[in-house]
Image (cartoon, rainbow, N blue to C red; front, side, top):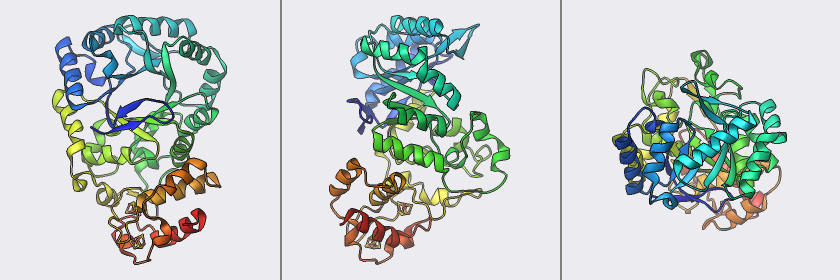
Amino acid sequence: MNYRKLGRTELMVSEIGLGCEGFAGHDETLTQKLMNTAEQYGINCLDLYIPNPDLRSRVGQALRGRRKQFVLQAHLCTVFQNGQYERTRDPQAVQNSFEDLLTRLGTDYVDIGMIHYVDSLEDWKAVADGPIMQYAKELQSRGKIRHIGLSSHNPIAALEAVKSGLVDVLMFSINPCYDLQPASEDCFALWDEKNYEHPLVNMDADREALYETCSRLGVGITVMKAFGGGDLLNEKLSPAGKALTPYQCLHYALTRPAVATVLTGAHTVQELTACAKYEDASTTEKDYAAALAALPKISWKGHCMYCGHCAPCPKGIDVAAVMKFLNLTKAQGNIPETVREHYSLLTHAAKECAECGQCQNRCPFEVPVIENMRQAAGLFGK
Ligand code: SF4
Ligand code: SF4
């Protein structure tokens, strides 16, 4: 298993993480089995948003004796009412639910206290200026949560949160279909067939700005919905008109800037094992470039997807990495210090480009790489 640093936190998380969907509606035995499988494959990042008391207790039991091996991302603002999960911004209910969480998990702290489901600017402002953020900060000062996070499906609300400096971690929905959809306060619109009736072209500018800002400010992203709730893996259900493979979806999410882990909602040991085996998959199995380029309803023409399909460069240039640093710089309007630092660590710089055109010929998205290499060499001076 590969581990990535979660943004500016000290946490190292496994590329493949585990969401809690698989724990819902199952018994203690399956919870134990899923946790054993996670441990076996080195999966250490666990998301818990479902506040079902029974689920929390089962996870707590399964964590006994191995709590420290896991990075727990648990949600503030979820409560269990009338037999179902609900989001709340009621301070007392939030506090009661969080205290219940710690008791049932049998732990003193969680690594990330995730403020749940902030999908509008209005809600973000109320959270940031009100009792929810105050409570999150108080929990942090008491060591009950190590870092404050925020979960969202809306890049505009998420970007404000990231820019505020109040959150260290962002849980965000990322897959190749969502990435082409404009921001919305209604996350169900992201999957609405109506929004796929006309061909979609290129990544939504707000999403791109979000990923690049997270990367620049050191806000680590934990990914949800990488498979679009499973629809992307099914030709009949995929809004893109064709199915992708799990490895392609995982690799797509893991090659977005700032992403540290993809939380898979595995419901069975087999599903979790299949996701963990992404780590041993070949470059060809992970390569999503040709599959995305062939999707009938979607086009990324001229846009670098950081897929690496253009490698190898005879001069040894890591084209995808140069493109990422160039785009980060363009988005910022100047060269951020961290980008300059990372660029200087590249073994081969854009200035070495011999303009042979091999990468351009291999790029399924028709990115004008040579022109971009010239721009990068001019900007970074090498
Ligand atoms: S230039 Fe093209 S092939 Fe290379 S990383 Fe970007 S999108 Fe992929
Ligand atoms: S055009 Fe430049 S970056 Fe592309 S393969 Fe040739 S030398 Fe490498």
